[in-house]
Structure formats: structure tokens, C-alpha cells
Amino acid sequence: MITLRDVTKEYSGGVRALAGVSLHIGAGELVAIVGPSGSGKSTMLNVLGTLDRPTAGTVHIDGHDVGRLPDAKLSALRATRIGFVFQHFHLAAGTLAIDNVADGLLYTGLRPAVRRRKAAAALERVGLGHRLDHEPHELSGGERQRVAIARAVAGEPALLLADEPTGALDSASGDGVMALLRELHDAGTTVVVITHDREIAAGLPRQVRMRDGLVVDDTAHDTALAEATL
Image 1 (cartoon, rainbow, N blue to C red):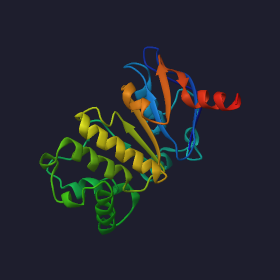
Image 2: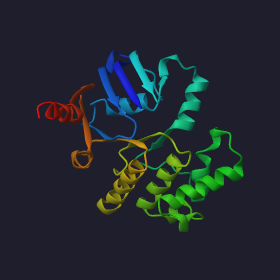
Image 3: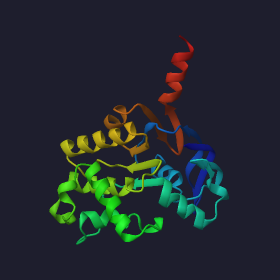
């Protein structure tokens, strides 16, 4: 699903956010990318989500060489194959939950009625079938994050990127969101959670730890080494 080879990302002023990262994430994995502020994990999210192109190195997402895609095809890849969940929900105020989700399908080319049907099905999937006609201010924090997740998965993306998905929630709501992400993974979605929370990361099957723009530890390597010594 994801392959990065010697990826660097530099910004003006010589700031190097990624310093030669190589990483492989297989289809169907559930992975935490964890690190403190300034470690490069947010830049990693932007690169994985094709929101930002690397300065050097290659990025393959779902079989596509991102560096070779023109902007129109890159946008199409994001619209059809990648779902995003953000810490602060990014729901439109004054807009019903079903329309917040349906609007996430605007660039798929589907008719409005089809978008709404898919939105309703996605909200049912996250346990909010009874909240279709509620606006964000009428929902709890956990419910708003579930609407955001429904929006991310309504188009049935192969890859779901979740950026600090529990950061704005209380512990009970956060636990519910993580349980939902595990359910989506169990159904076949590749899920990558970007977080600074080591406790959340420790609860996932694979942890990729970052510091100073580098991958400094990857439990997939530890597991492979342990299996090789058996």
C-alpha cells in the first residue's frame, strides 16, 4: 500500500522535516506513526496523503508513483483511494451530519442522491444512523469525530490516515474512536494513525517511531528479527 524510499522533505530556510525516510506499509496493516512535536510525523502525513511532494526520494501509494502523477491524477487518487481524519474534525457548522459526509464525496463524480445514500450508509457504519439530521453543535466530541470518520470512509478508500484522532476527546470517547478504527482495519482498510501519544501507539500492532525527521524504530523489524531467530 505504501512504499517510501530515501524520502526527504525540505522547506525554505534549510529546514529538513524528513531526512531520508524509507518505509513499507502493506495493504491491510494497522500502524501507528509516533513521535514528539517536531519529529516529522506531520510532514509524513502530508507525504503519505499526497498533500505534499517530497524534495527527493520516491513515494508509491496504492501502486502509484506519486512523483510521476500530474496534479489532476493526484487529486483523483486522494478523492478515491485515501481518507483523512483530523484531530479537530473540520465539520461545516450549520450543516447536517449527512451533508457533512456527503460533501466529502463531491470530487468523486457521483450524483447528489448517490452521495447522500453513501453518506447515510457510512454514518450507520459508525453507529450514528440516528444522528443523520443533527448539526455538529448538537453532537458530542466523540460523535463529531465519528462523523469525520464516516466522511473519510464513505468513498471506501483503501487507505485511511488519522492525524491525532483522539487528541480533542476525553478518554472514553477516544477509546471509542480507536475501537472504530480497529473495526475498519478488521474490515480490510489500511489504517495509519499519526500520534504523539505513546499509550495509543502501544495499543496498535505496529509502531513506527520518528525523531528529527528519521524513523528511529519500527516494531515490524523487531518482529521479523525475532521470527528469524526462532
